[in-house]
Image 1 (cartoon, one colour):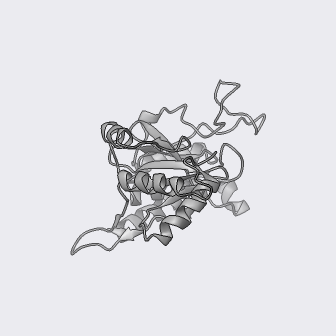
Image 2 (tube, one colour):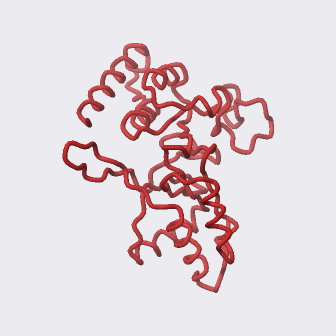
Length: 240
């Protein structure tokens, strides 16, 4: 299965290069297209291009909102419901918009995520590693890190949060109907999105394809709440 996906990815990359000879001449790799195709075909994560930045002013979002709080890093046209794993559609999007950020539609069969401020996330991950907590992929921007988790429903999330005495106010949840900015996109706060921990496959069973292992959301929330409650100084919140 991985060999078939690899050959398909290579054919699409070759097609992209033939469609964009100027880019081939400059030697600039189609990194965003390659990342989008990998997500869509290898991991089966539905993706779509983000709106990106204004061509006239790179600091402004290309959407009509002059006060956009996540410039460039959100869906607009196409909308979130257009997210797909179809490699032909993905290739067409990034052939026409090669600098567009890569967005994953969270929930459904795709991963969800729990995010928190970068500094608190680094400390929390170190603490969880010391405790032997097994984590999945982690997406990092200069300001926030997102821990990918298995898909969950809003009802399940509500039950988990209701059962807690407190939940850090800085946690954000990316579930059904949400989206997540993926590497190597430009972050809305500046800099680039990167993998703090890259996706890795579980060994495949007999005749099966390898699968991505993801922790359950309740395990991650429990661990983050515990880490924040036991922070030096007795803090009960993961500060922004």
